[in-house]
Image (cartoon, rainbow, N blue to C red; front, side, top):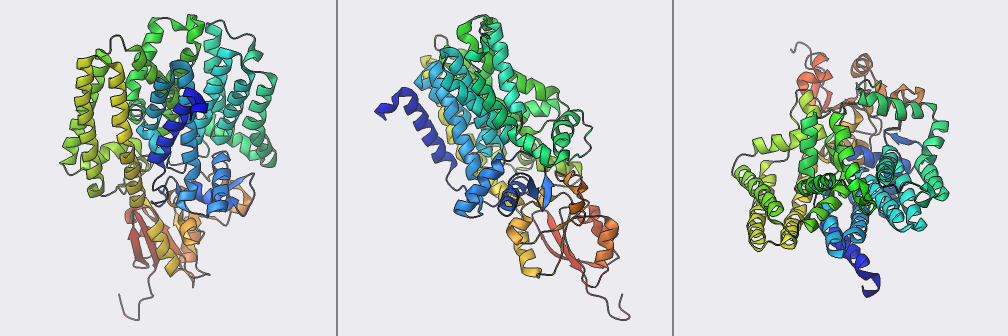
Length: 583
């Protein structure tokens, strides 16, 4: 490693540790449904169709851009359609995000503190969870992290190569999830550069070739998709952004937004405890009026991004628990800076973390000796999108058994309380370095807790067992009807081999896809289902709705027979005709 130099060694070591913590057991759990299943199925359907317009259940899908699906379909081609292959792209995104964060941290803070920034990002619980979850979040974060790294290094050194790296990365952010991931960092860096008097010449950090990369990578697919499907651009720009923020969507899904307090709670606990040190760093920048100092330009840009992301979604009428994730790489860098700057007088920062760890450890210990009901409802009620949807419908989300979560909570309690004790020693010694690395060690030891907790949650909600029952019962000519949005059982076709028709399912990510003529046979109304139910060969019904809220309640009495129930899903078939004179 000697040839790599300190920056390269720091990046390699932290990325290797991240892979060692995040990769084991990647394919050991079934897809979480809803959550992962629909994204894995979209990638599977790419293998036999167009790679330009995505499809889910055979219906046009416009909700997310294609990068995750392209990468996952490629992984399926190489390794087969498995859970592990599907999760490789999110893992790759996480490792790239850590690498970009460490590299920028090393250049701004030195090797040791840069490595701390990478460990801070790795050990944010929400980040660690999405590193093993089939969604585009970590790819989006990686693109943003490298966008900041490239452009900030270009600003500091007038290095055009870094500028091109940053521009290509921000273009990729738009391809991974949203053009706002391209625009937002450029705005933050531009404001910081303007305040420091370093905005001009713009071509010094945004050369013409960089702009070309931004436009081609960031908007090329959107332009082609819009020309191919005229409804796509209106849905993406107007309905999925402008009207979504105003809560006036024409094609809404069932997601239940968080309140401002709930969002800040989710974002804060997802970045625990690093958000505390990051807030200290932002406060120090404000007190020093750092925006006037060109040397502080990178830090002002990072602070603007963190505060801007959290503030924007706090006031936005629509936000979900993971919407704070894009701020995490910058937040990790600010936290590392706070610990470095605390060296002359570290006791306050150490004491604050000691109190946080002691309280969190005591809370986990208290939860571990209880029945888990309060803990489970509190954690899932704020952080889990599906639990919130089920609560809005008056249903209870299927939670993992407390017996599988209790050892994890007990382990967390022990690690946090041990960390509090070591922080006490750091306070006595007045060592910011010991305090910072104690916090990092404690949080890194909790990363496996996140991975195991995610796996048991997926197992408690997966459609795999139900899909096996469907595969065993249904013959080639049998029809399966799924009641409700496809995302509630997105992997049913992936696992069972049967593509369902959808009943009462237009309020979903396929809402706009349902308006196309070729989807008419996929989306059924209640009268059409009733007609099919009364036919000589009735369909099977799979539903995530409790019997009292399902269409089953409107069918003729005793005509529906419950065949199987598992993980909050029910499978029905038509009951045999009653004999003469029977009741």
